[in-house]
Image 1 (tube, rainbow, N blue to C red):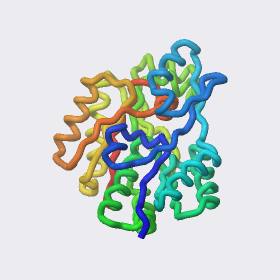
Image 2: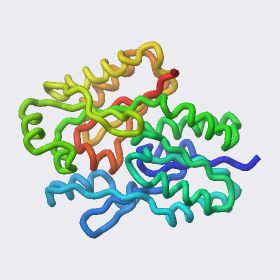
Image 3: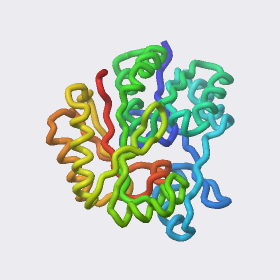
Amino acid sequence: MNKVIITSDSTCDLSPALVEQYGIKIIPLYVNLGDESFKDGLEIQPEGIYDYVAEKKQLPKTSAASMPDYMEFFSALTNEGYDVVHFNISSSMSVTHQNAKMAAEEVEGNVYVIDSANLSTGIGLLVLDAADLREEGKSAEEIYQEILRRVPLVRASFVVDQLDYLRMGGRCSSVAALGANLLKLHPLISVENGAMGAGKKYRGGIDAVMVQYAKEILAANAGKINPKRVFVTHTQTAPETVAAVTEVVKGTGIFEEILDTVAGCVITCHCGPGTLGVLFEVTE
């Protein structure tokens, strides 16, 4: 049986420490600032996006890793004797998955490409699951089949502090954004069937809102949460807010591991600063 390597595109938002710990290989998407293109996580970090928006009053664009990018990425690994299990951002959000599948069909060797139907650490949960399965001695085919079963079990959601980035991205009107900001409304963005959708609108100060959100999202899944791990993922969020939410998560006594992560460029481009999510899996 060949060696197995787990790979993902950069939208999985795993920290450098987790990438190193689990031996994950990452292929970057691109962030385009005007006419200049940068590799996500390598040549640009979220701070660069905040600076660009503050100066230009417009959002950067993101673009997929290309088929040639994937050909080079996969070939380098299969030539070393690896079977590859690869994860992509939801196919409804990017053509990255399609490009990866086409490349996988062209390279020599075994490459299993998974549509995560998710984004950010919703993907990261599955990536770490795959790494755990690899450590159990599972083959790439076995990992692929088990992860496909788990894809619908991910619960990924975020609460957005301000609507400015959603407005600039055309996801809400200027009037709606202004009204929501004045009323201190904070929308819940959740991933359902591979797509982002707006849900409940929380009202009030952001610290209280985030705590309420965390309590509600965990209560809504009570009795069926997979205790293995949970992510508290955020974008330029006040440390005290992150700490308050982490205390809520810890206080449930459910999870074996609580991972605090900073979201990457894709979530930053969509939702802006002050966004926070609690992401986990369920068992059924």
